[in-house]
Length: 201
Image 1: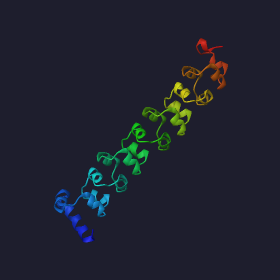
Image 2: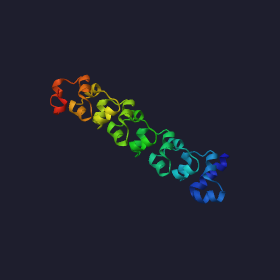
Image 3: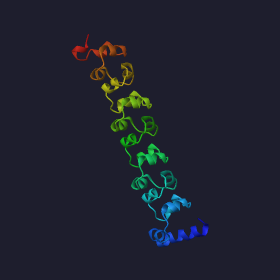
Image 4: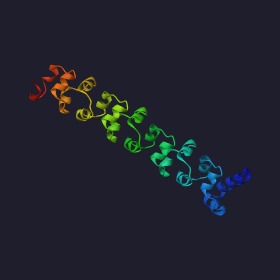
C-alpha cells in the first residue's frame, strides 16, 4: 500500500468510522494486515481484539503494541494463544487465569514455581506431589501447601525426607508408613512411644 493511500485510509478510518470505510472500499481487516498495518495502528483506529483475531493478528503482535490480557481474553484468544504470544505465567495469573487453567494449558510445576506460584495453589489446581518435587519444590513447601503424608508415601517419598521436612511420626503413621520405615527414617523411640498401641514395640 503506497504512503499517500495509507495516509488517506487512516484519515477516513479515523473520521468516517471503520465499518463505513471498509464496506465502501471492499477492504477487510485481513487486507489491512497484509498491507502492513500493525496491531497498534488498527487499535488506534478503533478495532477490537476480537476483530484483530478474526483478521489474523497473533497474540504476540497485540502484546507488543499494548493490548492487555483482559483485552485478548475478551477478544477470544485462548490460553495457548497467549502462551505462544510470550505472556509469562505470572502475567497470566495477574490477568485472571487460575493455576488450574494454566495446568490445563500445559504449564509445568517448574514453570509455575519460577513465576512465584505457591505449593498450595498448585495443589488446589490438581498438581500431584511428584510433579512439585520434579519442579523443584521442597518437601517443606509441600507440607506448607497441604500435601498429606499418604500422598507423599504414594509418590515414593522416604520417611527420612519427611522427617527432615518437619513431619512428625504421628503424621507419617496416619499416612501409612510402617514402624520399620519410621525407624529407618531416623525417628527415635521417644518419638514413637506416644503412637497408638499397635505401633509400639
